[in-house]
Length: 540
Image 1 (tube, rainbow, N blue to C red):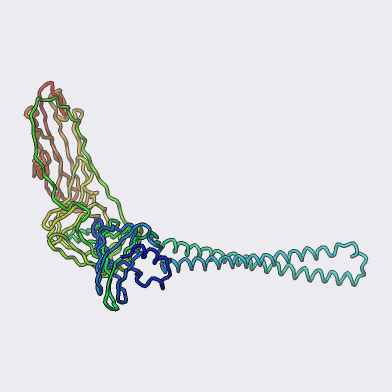
Image 2: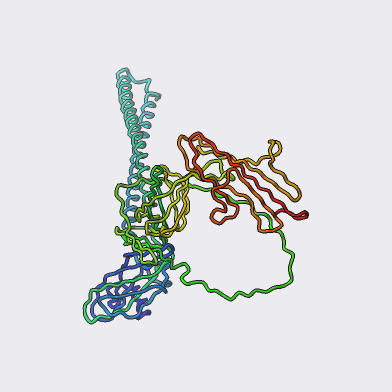
């Protein structure tokens, strides 16, 4: 490699640098990870016999140069030099699309200026006709007019009238033409604005680039290929799902997709795309475990923690519903036991820092069990729940999930990972006709209600569920009673009716009632708990 010679050679005309071969490259294919990408550029070249430097001046400025890997076919490869700073200029690299858009803006500007000049010329004609009329009106007011004979006065009057009429007619015609031309300006101005918006919509590439120089040697004239791969952090993809539930059958269709983004500084055009679930930017080795040293000492006064309030989060942001196309190109999935790879056949184009490309990854079909779930402690209505087992044989990755009940969009959630064979629950919105009421009874209602002493607290809650819909529902009602891990704090509870399940999924004190509720029917659950503790203690 000859870095000093190369630096001067790049600044000279092309005919003077025979040993250096400048190449123009583009992104050929990309393997995208959730964060990061492997980018591949394949560049054909021709070279005579001898030693040469293949020069690339169009690598993105933020390319991780330490990850650059180069292979050459057709010649023997020598050293590889990369440079991020002090890179010679690439010359005029403006894209054809931007050049065409700029030319269109210039053409529209010229058309508008020509039209405005025509209107100005028409206005000059109006001004000239008005001046002629003013001059003719002064002819009949001179001091020598009264001394003229009758015939001369008659001829003068006829001439003034004829010329004045002609001048006024010319002014009238010129004004009408100017008015029509001004109305035409609106179309020209609108066309110019559209051309400017079209230019603004094009995404220019960053001018700063990195350089790559590869030394090659050949014994004869060669036709070869330079392949360059490197890693970038400024690209990635994210899963997106449209999950559609059919209530009548419990069928659940999981339409998978991916959002592709990149901010590398160059636009990708007609790139072969592969998506991978590998996460090279994440943890790649198991965690370390260290010895645990425990000690004993004198007891200390423990401060009482403040009771934590229950947190409840409900959020659903609506998105625009995309109409399903009759035929959609899907990516083909390949699972090697460690990761899933999706190969997308059609080439794609993604503008840097602007485009968010969505591609389809196929649809998975499964069955779900449907129930109405009620949490009267927090909610006023029950919610439609679907419980599924991922029997598709494929991994459902975490990602944005759009939920549809039939053709109706009901909300959006950030879905969790659903491994093959794992169970998951999805909510498909409120059932407004299943009304919930939870009331803590008090003395004024003539019931035992809420009784609190210094060392005793009893609470009675009345839960009512009413079905105002015209169909029967399989219902699961969830509520809770407090629990204790201290001998001195005694908690007893009872309910009518008894719950179907206690300590739901290992959560102590969480209760569940399962029953069917007919149209127009209602159901009442009474839940009571009593807490007792020694005098002088404080309930936390």
